[in-house]
Length: 300
Image 1 (cartoon, helix red, strand yellow):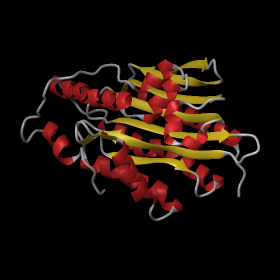
Image 2 (image 1 turned 180 degrees about the vertical axis):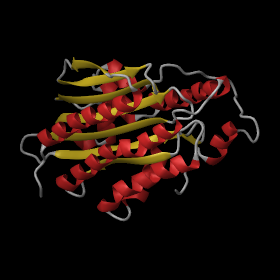
Image 3 (image 1 turned 135 degrees about the vertical axis):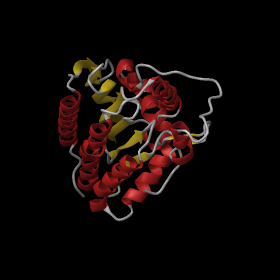
């Protein structure tokens, strides 16, 4: 069995943050501001935020590496065998909120977790994925997104895409709205069954594949003209994003319960959003098409 190499994972994640930020700055024209921070209980990170850029109204690409002697309640509830172990959690997480409603919001995250106890084998796993949240979807964009996901998964097994695509559809689902957050993508967690090297390679492929999936869509839609109607619908749908992240997202719960940096954890929130009582889209409208054709799991 291959040895767990925490240092290699951390080096990759920090390099990934650098690479993604550079690619986003190239397409946006703006610059990320970095906010380095330390966690009182152990660890720290680099939060990078872009605001009011040429493409992105707000976005963040964060790296964090936190450790401690006591597991957060959300983690031990998920994995009771972690109680009484020291832990380390490291990852890159990003959320991008474009100005133009025709460009989808997107999220990506890749992470590594290890819990250790003297005299016992470490418990470790990788997790992550990415998902796409369009407001005015284009069929070809969604197809490209999922074709890229399939290509990332293909070297790791014939069933990986279907399994992690279905996991994404299930995870990014709002039960109280009976709708998915967007058109899905990939999601995986607790990945250790392939051995360390193969799991690390897969996590790396997902992290590096995000910009290949997302940036061609941004380039294609960034010049689309829009008006107040599209802007108001974008802000309304952003409210769903807020709802999911605050109510259901395990990463948000872990970060807050482990004493992480609140500003960095809540970086995923959009700069503006709105709520409207009992909203119903007009029949046969572009807004109605989102609900009818995209906010439910589909085969791509």
